[in-house]
Amino acid sequence: MMRKRILRPGLFAAAALVLVTVGVPAEEIEKSPHAVALELVFTLRSADIRALETGDWWSDTQERTWRVTRPFAPGYFDSTHWFNVEYEINGKRVANWFVDTEKGTVEPALEKEGSK
Image (cartoon, rainbow, N blue to C red; front, top):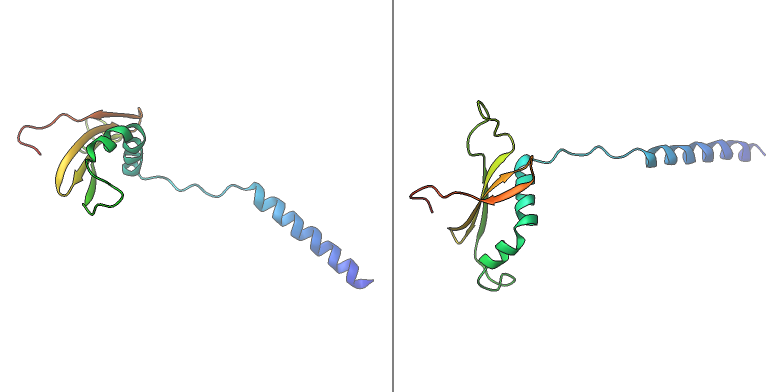
């Protein structure tokens, strides 16, 4: 009889703990703004990326490099959400985009004279 009395409150406590922890969402980890810029390029320019790939990207061994930089540090102009995203295949730049993460836009970047 004593065993049933101890067991019941223990079961209720365990059930209450499960219900409470299930209802609490896990703390969300803030994404890097640079990663957000890459996600936008991957999402909005996937057809462009595929068109740049001339071979069989499933089996080639060419190096791919993604570079994400801010055009300049935030200051007089708020460049917090502005990024240049470059894509290279085997060390040759094949694409360059200007990304505004606040607006969710990806545009072809203007090329500087003498770049590439």
